[in-house]
Image 1: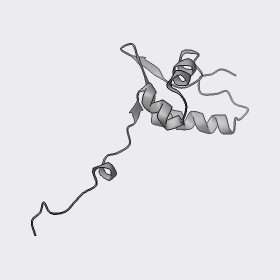
Image 2: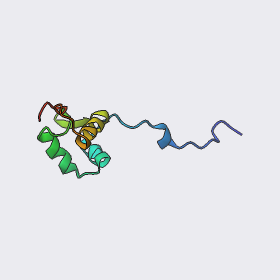
Image 3: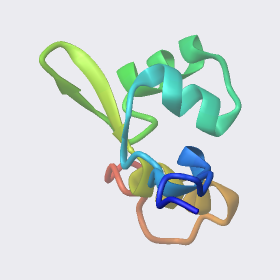
Length: 81
């Protein structure tokens, strides 16, 4: 048996992307991509413009979701509220 006979699943070996495009963020959050753009433009979701394109960190989106599910009396991550 050769070393190449083992079948590998490439999806299981690829780590989840840490930085996402608006389309990837929309898919991750199960919302329409227009919703992502609207939230980003209004500063309601953590994201940055890089070279004119929006980018979102997965960890920041996870933190944002956690805060949205159970807001505490402290201000949100953007300092509003």
